[in-house]
Length: 597
Image 1: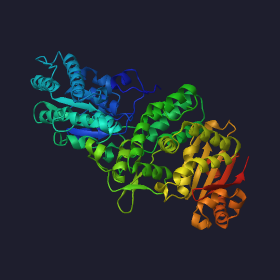
Image 2: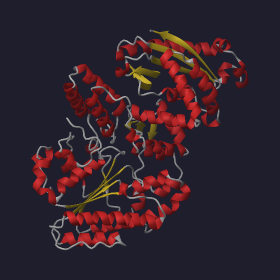
Image 3: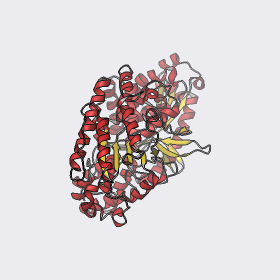
């Protein structure tokens, strides 16, 4: 089995006999959905391969290769009437630089469009009756010449547009002082992108353009394009297309089983690999009516390729090719509601709920409009940093973090927000190592008291409680190289605050499993003020009645969770369980409730 990591060319993938998760069965549904479609998915989710598959299916120049490319796939056994009946023109706007002033951006776009139209002309030179006139100054004129040429053949054009929103995403991540002129040049008034989509709309009205399929990450810019292009049907939330991109679990299980056979591994290793991948990569749901969860294909292929080559799991679970998503987290954290939403999502006790996803908003909205929770949560959904998790009894959409890899992005972003100094990060790492190597929680508690509590005492965190403290510890301890990290882990209808279970492939190391239960005592409950608290020694803190009550509650919870962890993960001989009580946002008291090593 050959895994097509990084390969988005369908022809190459099939010809070189790489693994392909057959999605050609969806072609009839796409044809039935309409002639101009908009399909959104997070980056690195297989959209470019989907477009390449459609390109090869409809290209009239590849009719003689239909059997070799599609004969073994679902659509090859029952093709639609449209196969190999179209001229196909493909644009990928991620290849166009958004830098420079308005004229430079327009020039970059026109050069790219003319290059693609020139390649189209060469690809179909045996079929086109007249040459296409390339206008170096006006690519829209070149496009109209292309349409004139194909209309004489009787074959329509299928236009595929990949990453239509790349310009808008670049503007969104930039600096506001610079972006106004770029926005005007691209999407306002007669900006070059708006003019382009106006031309596309006109061409679909009987001038040779038969079908349009557009992909992107979010509906940013669709509002700006509405007056120019208001005919695309949004299909990205339809349940029938939930798995159009990404892997199903049955496909992941089959690939893991084949690798285990190649590596001569037992069935238990297949089950273990599937459990690992489910924890780290699964969890995406793109329709409120979908029951099936989808795996991120890039991450899954990264894991499987390493598993096949080494017959063991990769050390690093997060593929560095997804590191760019951190930029989106940085952007979200700068929004007024962004910081709170990131904290709430990571805490996972109160669900992130919105009435509906924002489905049309423009670049100007991104740059200047007020950002409420619904707006910010919608962006996180489109970026793949939140996903649909069901519906409340009141009809609201529930959004949650899809998997452990994405949870790591949250943890890292919060740590960056709270620990901007690099040396503080080094101290935090050493404190975390003291816990999972030696079972010593004191350095971490000292660090939280001295560093994090200075931030939490800010009025922005006035409503915080043990959930905030738990989130602070999670961000400092998060380590997916060694652990399966869970916050509010569900254990037989109970929820442990923080569990750190050593990854199955890391059991040979002398690191500890960790279970922590958090409690919070307000200054009022303690009967003390902050100044007095700072001067008290730890024995005096432990003697406070309110603290003792909370510790008893925590230890009772820990006793229940230890038994449930054993039932879920098997024997955990190196499990260390701790209760941590925060007194205001001033001091921490902890105790080792159980040590099984």
